[in-house]
Length: 282
Image (cartoon, rainbow, N blue to C red; front, side, top):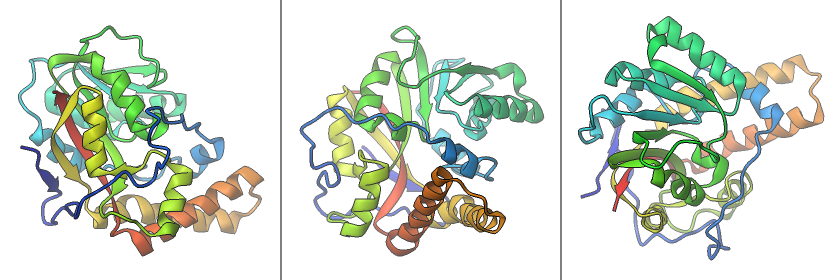
């Protein structure tokens, strides 16, 4: 039975009501657009304490929800970023982890962090696309992707990655989604622009089913941690950039988008959440 969890000390917000696919009104399509990485985005988010939605303690909590895996498990982290969760996975399972990202700087940071954590021998860095994996079907016991689905869309990601699972393998994917039906038009419009595939929990189940998967469990990042680990450092970064000045047009646009994202979280953060879904073959 699928359950929902949050970090200790905070209750996860369960979706309410009869959810529908809200943002992508062109929902008849099963393809979602690939989202190119804006160079300005790389600069703005570079060296933030914790880019994206994940938190180390929560990564460990999600690991505890996993069923028993083959020993040693074959693991790949898709869209590893700076490798926080990659290192946690390697240390926990004491097994090699492929750390894949299309940003060489992120790969380099992962390698450096792994050395500092004493797990260099377990990290296998790979520069490449999460949408074009060369691995054979049935290669992995654990496919982990905390932020990667936002680059290609959930539907496409699950369809591409499902064949790579071993028969008893598990896939963990993180995605931002609506908690309640009928989100405010302002919030829905913003997310439609930056993440067209954003949907609600009920539709995530439907997408998983179409990919031949089922959701066994889920875990929601508490709002307070999302603020502390992501939005507050991002806000400080924006203030510094504004003071320094000299922004080009691309950076200015991305900063404005980040400011809007912070505003959306402050005003409508009770309507959406960052969730991690644990999926297995149906």
